[in-house]
Image (tube, rainbow, N blue to C red; front, side):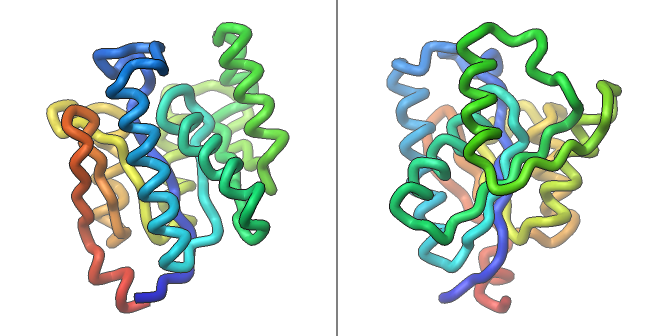
Length: 183
């Protein structure tokens, strides 16, 4: 099975998880490990371009993994889809630092909206899905009306392959995998 294309990330913010901002928590470490496995899986299927939505939590963890992989695999590209200029303004200093390091490591930074609006995040999510063939989602299905739920539905409606990592048990489900085999 060989797949050439791009993959986007979506997932809940830290406050959406039981462990919050405690990245030393075993469940957080498990999510990061599951993301690494899926990113390597996509790479092995031929994916070389990854999109991050630049939010705290899953977007940050996935971007840091891609940047780490990029150190040994020079053919990986990371594209940042920033929802609006200044999104990091209300973040604490350590999150701002991580954000800037991610942007500095990206091959391209796309600012989807010039300023904040209620629709900026959905516009960013649609941009990523529209430019990707697959989506890796850390998604709690009990939160279907979250931004992550919106992105998963949009991806499926647009016939994208979606890998869902359940943050409660770390099981993964792949939807539309047959699409990947036919590209």
